[in-house]
Image (cartoon, rainbow, N blue to C red; front, top):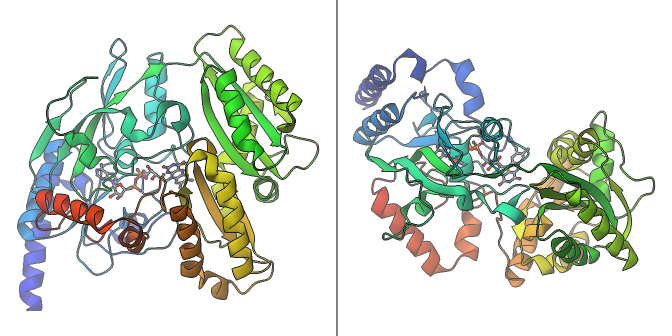
Length: 476
Ligand SMILES: Cc1cc2nc3c(=O)[nH]c(=O)nc-3n(C[C@H](O)[C@H](O)[C@H](O)COP(=O)(O)OP(=O)(O)OC[C@H]3O[C@@H](n4cnc5c(N)ncnc54)[C@H](O)[C@@H]3O)c2cc1C
């Protein structure tokens, strides 16, 4: 039996090599290694080969060959996902198909405010390409130097500009997708209005590669901001975050591009673990908001609006102190605290992570309830709650008590998660706000989504991928 299996596998690999050529077929163990484990180091998989197709036709050919052989395909972008969705499982013979060679911008149409890009374009490169055409592509997140637009769309990524511009889903007009049987769907329409039946593109956005492989997308662009104003504001207390959000939304004419919650512990972690970070304020406070306004006119009005909003917030006792960046360089330094916090956390050591959302106004109550519940479960532990509070999204992490036995602490991951997710669910929230399901949250999906929702998802999966070969073992 082994001989027959080996012969079939060898035949499959030979066909893939012939279809993709030497640039597209990598079986060197060293070159494959970074593609087999996830960014957080939670999952280590195996694969017979790493495929690097250079065109949509090559993706289609590879998928067709794998479908005929009954072999699973794991689409992969920058492999920065946080739920183990982009790596193969161990010992299942799944091939990894990474899109990085498909990195051309096919078209930027400034008048249409659209950009058509291949799936393997790195997000930061797309932001730059848009800016070079005097346009903004607003998707922005900590991993933007390595994540790919195909991965961003497949995870419906959020990031720091959702408040103003929406999630990745809101930034897509059209898609090109290779379906699980190798057919190519060309839905690269550049239309703002197109009510012609079911919104098929939405099936693939946020599907984590389980319904097909995105090979290109038409993305929405916006006027390039000429002026941004950034502040780091110390809050009276946690509840003040929601009051401040209302003040700045009104004061800016709803031009708040970011509103991030930063706890004191985050500042301390960055000061301790990252070189060149400075505390933006002289005195310590428990909670801060990092606020950014963006305006399309370079006339000083954006900065003035931010200053006026903060003055009002101080007068009303919502904000205790604030630093407004006086230069791009100062703004960048403030942003480092938020953007490099995940890196500081990695250096600080193990912690138990969650990415939840609740209605925006309930974020402070959620944090207080979860803090109380967890600190009674793990006395002496510290919670680190930060993130995109303007979207009701909290990265809610539990750090071990000083000197704790880390293995015993991490063994509580499931019990801790149950408490956090139950509280989020009771507050009409979600157990996964922007990171998705992958391998990590499959059980939670079954528990917190209704049986009807899960069955609808299974029906869609069966309809598009009846053999279950597209990113098997992820999401459902
Ligand atoms: C430091 C850091 C900060 C982060 N900040 C944020 C944040 O603020 N907001 C946020 O939402 N996420 C954040 N993330 C998570 C991650 O960066 C995003 O999920 C990102 O969108 C993943 O893109 P990627 O190219 O790395 O995808 P990958 O990790 O490679 O893949 C993610 C999923 O998409 C699938 N996939 C990839 N490419 C394709 C394709 N072309 N077609 C079909 N399926 C595909 C994969 O199979 C997998 O299921 C962060 C991660 C890190 C490490």
